Every structure is written in C-alpha cells, then in structure tokens.
Image 1 (cartoon, helix red, strand yellow):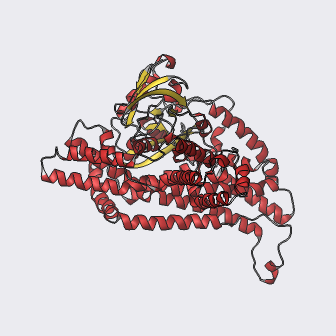
Image 2 (cartoon, one colour):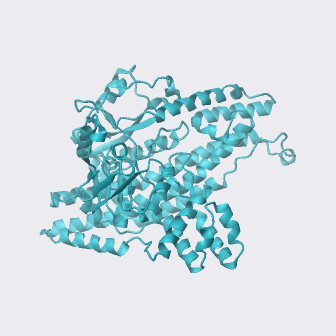
Image 3 (tube, helix red, strand yellow):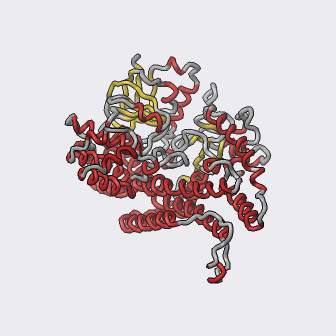
Length: 613
C-alpha cells in the first residue's frame, strides 16, 4: 500500500531486473495487461489481494495447475451452478510468480435479487440432503484417487513386444504415454471439480449464521460465533490421531528406547524386526500409513510438499515427541470435552438472549446447518490437497523420469519449470522422435530454458509481494475472502497502517483477527517453512505465514499461534480452537515484524499482539 493509503496500480509494479520475459512461464490470461484498454481499466478498478494463504512462495510453472483448477471450480459454482447472490467468481492474476485474486461483485441490485431465488432453490437442496450428497462425494473422491493410483506411466521400449503384433493391438507405447499424461492432468482437474462441489456452500452457511448472529447481537465477536461450531471431530485430525495411537502402543510394548535409537526411519525399522513387540508395532505403523500418511508436509499446493509417506522420518519424530510426553505423564489428547462444554455454554448464553420465537427458530436452524456443513470444510483437504496431491506429484515425477531418460530435461525435478501444456508439447516431440529414431528437438531447447527459469524463480523468492493492488473496495462480501483469507475492511486498514511504517522494528504492538480466545505470554519462533517447524521448542509461540494440517503435532507443543494470512475459518484458527489455545490470524506482516526469541503477549480474544522486549 502506498504512503497515501492507496494500493499500488497493478500495471506500475516494476519487473525485477534479470527476469524480463517471465510472463511466458504462466498462462497468458493471468497477466495484467496495458494493451487492452477495457481490460486494463477493469484491472485497475478491481481489488486484487495476494493469495499468501496458499502460496507463501512463488509458484512453479507446473504447480499453477491447482490455481487454474480452483479458478474454474470456485467461480463456476458461485456464478453458474449455485448462483451466489452478491458475488460472481474470483478472478486471478500473477505478479512476479505470486498469485493475486479478486472477488467479482454483483453490482446491480436487480441482478442480486434475481440470483437469490436460484440460490435458495439450489443451495437449499444441498443443505437439505447434505449427508447423502456428502457420502456420495466421498465415494467419488475415493474412486478418483483409486484411478490415479492405478494409472500406469510406462517408459518407451526399444522395440514393442511381439504381442502388439500377435494381438493386433494397433496402438504404440508412444501413444499410451501421451494418453496417460492426458489422463493424469484430467484426473487432477476432475479432483478439483469435486473439491468445490460443497465448499462454497460450507462457507456460505457459516457466513449466513455469522451475519444473523451479528444482526441479533450487534456486539458479538466473530470468535464467539466460531466457538458455537467448534468441538466437532473431523477426519483431517486423523493422521495426527494415528501418530498418538502409535505412541501409546509403543509405550504399552515398552518400545520407547527402540524408537529413540535413531532419527532415520530406515535404521529404526530394521531394529524393530528383532523382537516380537517390535514387529507388532511395525505392523501397526504400516497399517496406519494407508491412507493416513498421505498427508502433505506443507499446504499440498507445491510439488516439494512431500507427504509423510515420502519421508517417514517426519511421522517418526512426531511419534517420539508424543512418547516423551507420555513418559512425563502429560496428556497428548485434544481437550475435546472442555471445548464442547464451552461451546454449549456460549450457545446457551446467546440463545437465552433471544426473546422472539421466530428469531430463536431461525438461530437454531442456521446453527444446525453450520454444524452440519463444518466437517466438510476441513475433511475435503485430506482427500484433495493431501491424499490426491501426494500421489499426483509422484506420478508427474514418473513422467519427468521418462523425459530425463530421453534428454529433454536434465533432472526429474526440472519438470516443474514447464507449464503442463509445454510438457504435452515436449512429450509429442519425444514420442515422435522415438518413433522415428532421431534426437528430439527439445533436448536443445528445454534444458537451456529451464536453467533461465531457475534463475527467475530465485529472484522471485527475494521479492516481497504487495498485500494488495488495485482499488480498495467499499465493502467485501465474498464469503471465502472474509472467513478463509481474513480480508475485510478492518484488515485492510490494519495492513495500511503497517505498510506505511518505515521501520518495522519499531512496531511494538499490532492487530490481526481474533482466531481463538485466550491470552498467553511466551517466546516467539518464526517458522516460514515446514523445514523450520522442527526448531520449535516446548511452550513457544508459533509465528508463520500460514499453517498446514500436517503440522498438527506441533499444536501439542506450542501455546499460541500467529499467522500472516487467514480468517476465522483458516486452518490455524480452527485447530487452535480445537486445542483450546490462543490464535491471532490474518496479521499481514507478523513474520516480518516478529523475530524468533522475542517475548510476546498474544491476545486471541481481541487479536492484539504485543512485543514485550
């Protein structure tokens, strides 16, 4: 935000020296343009905010697949399927490798009115049949994942097997490689079609309940509303619960010393085979891996967010952490009963203030709907961003291995520097060269281009994206923007105040969203990546751009959480409420202001953060 409180013009942000031409790494429709007067005016008049919730670092060309997928899926459901009254879809752009998004408001009151009837009929059908439709969704998702797991991506042979002739197949391995790649991409897009089948409605139900509560109780904090739907168990917590079960079993079998023997799973696994107790525990570990260890170590949106199954040292370290707590007679359980009791107390307290029978009935109905839809809001992430994505990234690596064998790229991991359409073109080059017996043209094209793109990505990482660009909106109404990203008029004001401060080191207090109630004082630990999470010490306060479900074990270690991005329904806010610890989310700049080792006071009830030293 500029010194006069306005957001920068998106067309005036300078290209980083040495990255000229970076735009070719991303879809053309993602560019802010100056040569189309109508589109340029639309872009300048719109409000674009940086999607740091999903992208704490620049996006690789291939990894843009998920941004494109949800660009389509969310927007189609808002605009064309359920007809959400106040907002159409969410538009997308990119600046220096960082995605920016803009809700597209419905500005004509008559159009809003027309859309209400459609929304009530269509969303109403889903709300009324939620359990049956959600069960059907789970069946569809599991079938899609099974199809992905079964997909074969085979290397090209020097000579086709004789059976191709004797069975009259009439199709080549080259054709099947292209076909498998197409299927891989199609399954990814299909998965994200399902991702948003319910999600808009889940957040809409929550926002509707919150709006109604604010109408009945004008002074009610947003956090009180979220507490009324807390204490509901969801499968997104199951991977962490599996680790706790394994820790308890290890104590029961007296295997604590064995599991502490080494930090490498391969070493521990070998030692476990030497005893009956060890073999029993190893079998339980292997059983837990599928599907629960298909949980990403990050958000799941980047190819380098490997799953626990890709690195078994990660779940091992968490299991040992839980064993240490059990040996000290400390609890490793979430305080579910206390959270539920507080939920019921708050609900009863506010419900008793309602004097009108009709209002009370509406309150009860909206609360019931919000509770009904809430599990999906968390559960879908396990199936999509974690289980599906973890398998998907490794399937793409199989494609990369074939491209490496044929000299189109130098290393399997180089495949991420190509757009998915460029990979399709390169595969056609590969299979036609294989079919013809010549060298593929791409071997002289892609290695050089990828090397340049690696340099561009390095420069992107050194750049700090603006929180927002374009025109500040009068009001923000899109449900996702409010409850997931935490972008509201209040948060924009807070961002502006921080942005206008020349010396961030001079800031001693600032505010974010009150994500989970309570006040604590403690030492800060800034963790910008999952690799830094291992540095967290018992009782510290986690400060991060965002959090991931795979970080669940650390919530048994910390006493509060602060994030740069996120609203009251972001992962950090939800998990902290379930663990009964304070959280302040959507601060905008916490990881830039706070330094590891500083003493903080975190007030999760007001959203205030104070640096005490």
